[in-house]
Image (tube, rainbow, N blue to C red; front, side):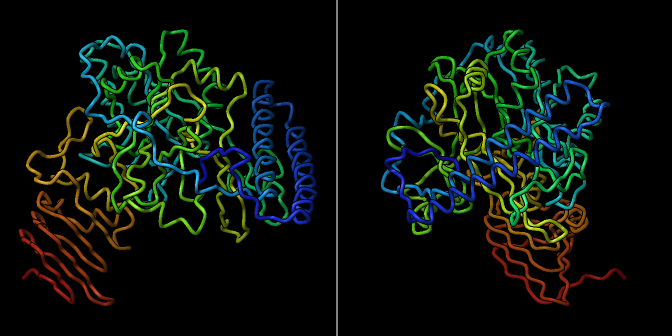
Length: 505
């Protein structure tokens, strides 16, 4: 991913003049051809399409073309980051959470709205539909837990914090159906859709879809950086401002640690900041995560894909880059409106290479929501405790959140106080556990892991009920073998391999 804007004087241009002339010429042709194809799609909209829908589609295609031409410009210049200008953030650019004032007043909650990024599908975990509909704890889904948190917040403090979902065309229909079950809860749910952009054929540089109604494989949601444009265009920013809301707390729907924090909200108000990014200390498991840097005296988000090849190891170093972005973000609604209305937003283009099921290679041009930090006044990071970053990206993560390592309190997961170490165990489950349904079938009940440091499991392995795992446990069932860990077994600093089956008789 790329998330950094850099001054022209500090850029390195590896292309020669003649190659740049060629690139510029081909870029101009590609931009013109793309514009022509997009216009054809706009004009192909039939009479059944309302004027509002027609305008919205044209606006999306115009925004996409703007991003496409920026991508072409970057490509022709061959712009490269000047690593010598990359510095650690200054002390005032990263505030320690423990230094924040404790907030006793709750009136500011009436100025808050909470937004979850809900555009992703559960396909990587073998599930159909929105990822937010996957059950993660005690029969409750990501959405259930989020709604329960906001409902409890509203009830406890007698406030009305709205809950907003940014859906994609992949998740919108199913999400709207799901949220109907919360109609009797003390929480107001609002939804809007992020943009739908056409994938680009890597060979022809033309859009994959030929008409607005072509199947979904030709389209994609352009990353969470699309939040700003889509939120303003949906009318929700104006609506929220009219209701006295001033602040927005944004996070990924699969981060179970991203709960409303009064101290951070209060700090945002007191420091007159328009944008706050929560960062946390990096571990060896987080070496690819984006980080905040000082670049020419300005705070910026730096992602691994932007780093010159010769400096990748520097970027991954825990010593030089000690923090990473959790994607928990606090924003001023007024500032979002200003930045969009004044057309100030220029987020760096992220190039995502994909291969369709048909074998066709395509480009997806995306942006990252955190990259906007450079556009907001008094923007800075807050180094928060690790418990505010609890993502569930895989069944290895699911293993942790379903265990006795955590307990559930009004939709919020809290670390078991009996856990001696402040960090969570490192867990690596093999391909046999990759899909949620397979993962669930391999455990009679979640193992007890309060004293676990490291777990690696590969091959055909199952666990009985009440298994205890302590220290470092490695279980390897080689091809053709199967290992059944018996009910009540205690494994402490053990390596189990070969073949082990407990048969009923």
